[in-house]
Image (tube, rainbow, N blue to C red):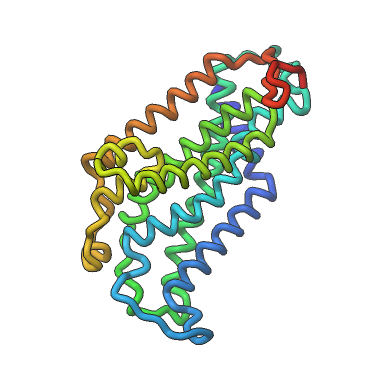
Length: 282
């Protein structure tokens, strides 16, 4: 049944116009942002030049992760809504008549909606790639196209961070039965991320900061902070030492959060209310 529910949820999104609207918006943003950084609008402003390549692996990773912040705000309406929708329309009252387990239900709901978000995010990379072929690109700002740079950025940083945010939003919305709490959670997580980044600048032991910072930026900085311009243009993203430890640690924590939510989820569970401070029926 897991595969059946997964396929049903995925097909439902593929028929939803909002899915293609999201793709168009983020593809367009990525195309324009990368095109602008590569100089396609130089005729309308002072021409710029730089020794740094705007499509270098480290610059590309910064752009992809930067646009991913906006995609985080889609998580409540895509991942959070996957279970919330059933309770909103009282579909949960008939779920017991179907021969599936709690594992089938929750995992298919989460991973189908997570795949939808990943597909949307992939179009950000496609927009960045196609921007280098736009007319008017300043070739002095354009380095060689390296497919591995995109793969690294997605597999090491973009997708794991989406998974971390997605698990938290999915768990919070599923427990509270309130999609608004999902948006509040995103804002709080971004606020916490900003606080963590401000405090880590004052810490001397960079290894422990790089290890425990949940978004991987400090782990990347641990190796790239003193790179020369040449190294930033030529080197692929580092994937060794503390970068690997950091990614595995937060993947484990994300999985633990998902397991905790699975353990306490029940179709008959009443929604937890943050405002009343106790369980209440919705």
